[in-house]
Image (cartoon, rainbow over all chains, first blue to last red; front, side):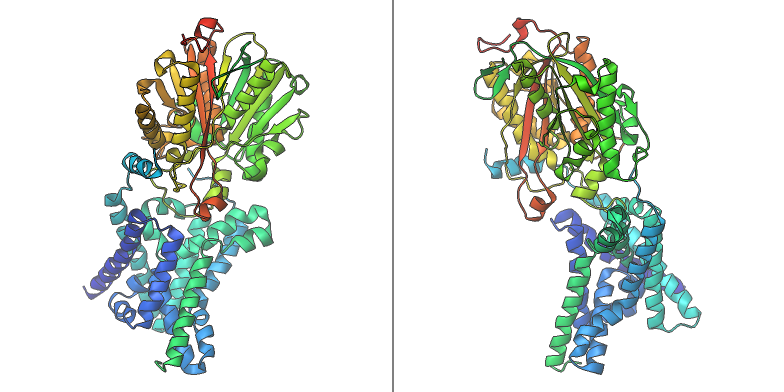
Amino acid sequence: MELFLEYLKAFVVGGAICAIGQVLIDYTKLTPARILVSFVVAGVILGGLGVYQPLIEFAGAGATVPLTGFGSLLAKGVKTAVQEKGLLGALTGGFTASSAGIGAAVFFGLLVALIFKPGDKA
Amino acid sequence: MTNKDYEQLNKKASPPSKSYINIPYAFLIGGIICTLGEFLSNTYQGMGMEQDTAGAVVSVTLVFLSALLTGLKIYDKIAKHGGAGTLVPITGFANAVVSPALEFKSEGMILGLGAKMFVIAGPVIVYGISASIVYGIIIFLFKLY
Amino acid sequence: MSSKLGKYTYRMDNPPSVLAYAAIGSKKESEGPLASYFDIINEDTTFGEKSWEKAESRLQKDAVNKALSKIQLSTGDIDCVFAGDLLNQCIGATFGLREMGIPFVGIYGACSNMAEGLALSALMVDGGAMKKTIAVTSSHFCTAERQYRFPLEYGGQRPLTAQWTVTGSGAAIVGERVSPPYIKAVTLGCIEDLGIKDANNMGAAMAPAAAATIKRFFEDTCTVPDNYDLILTGDLGQVGSDLLHQLLEREGYHLGKKQADCGLLIYDRETQDVHAGGSGCGCSASVLCSYILPAVKDGRIKNMLFVATGALLSPTSVQQGESIPGIAHLIHLSADDDTKTRPSTAGGM
């Protein structure tokens, strides 16, 4: 039961964040690229203000998997790095925290591009 | 006919997006991807990983799955219905990296695949990292850490 | 020599014939209602080529060769080819036709290319400078997506106003008067822009140009929509067609059921997920050369206007926030060259 509730929370919070994105697509002139940028920057701000961490504790992957979670991860990484290295940490923290995700995207992107052929839609 | 008059005509003639379908779909598919993330996180922690490490490995796993589905031409088919549900999770970021790399391979390995890889997702890195640096400078200056 | 009627229309004194025509489509077109009318359908959208751009070049080459073979002509019989497409620097046309050895005039009017090529052909042939010319154009869904929008594998949603780029090509050989279809008049369009900025709503961007060109033709020839069996617009799609009717209604011209749109004919919007309809140079070109010209040839359509429309945007202009200019050229096609149906300043037919 507890496990079910945990998954339900992840589902609802993650779904809700995505639904906000869809509202922006349908009702504003924001292009998908702008929406992604907005979500990441919003995540940095919310993470920096300490508002996002409680949501992560509540919903787990429901809050970390959307790009707002990526943004909050950047803020968290910067904070840790500034504590350790001072001002230099402001530059290194974001990349350190996001390195696994970005590294994976670059490398798997390269592999997939090498292995697969571009295809038509339809 | 002025531009404004025409804009009015155009608004009436253009069908609006079917939000009553799009939004529930975005919720559903986004929710499913996040639930998958939660399941993976539990599985990895069950294997003895720490929470932070498990979180990173979850990201890597989702990115891998998205890259694979992009290569198999499945991700864009899900995205047609999922909309923001496939755009907003980290899988959408991965799709935005992989799809131009694959598509522009025909313009060569360096200026095609390599250079175009971040043509869509680049801004996310640029503004995400920049925002975090600004945040870092602020907390450093005001000793908020 | 063609004589000028009014300010914008040229009447052919000796109406040139469309001697032969050919249309090529691919998978999506093969699933549409006009599939059986195409000369060549290749369900492999790569056409066996290594890149999408090569595939599009192939479309033009095959369309020209098919049209030539229908009347046993060779490339040496052709005085000039008017060709264009949507790709940067029109490489669909230039690469497709480079081995043909036909004097080449590259044209760009976006999706209005077919009417532009036919208009130039008719003027050249009627003027006596050339005996036989070819108008050809093409579009390919994949090259257009790559250039104007997103990589094909990118997961995005298309708004309901968006149109689907036709993978296809149409080629028409124009020569001196022998048999129908005849080109009786052409009206060259001006660039019109009523401020539409949404690149996902090109029908709305092009409708003002179509309305302006059609109105000018009616004024120049003193005719009305009822004088024609069909007014065929290029690729306005559903949104653009609705707007065209409204714009012309305001000018006092009621199109009613006379108007049809190539973008709405080529696909089944209910089942093919194409949203507002088809688009691309290949849309009006392939519909004209597959479904329409045979009907004019055997008289099922006696008198019609072909109004191909183009959206003159580029990825750069869209990113810089510019509005989208539109253009439309008009070709008056007829099954007979009887002077009674020829538009004239003396009150039309």
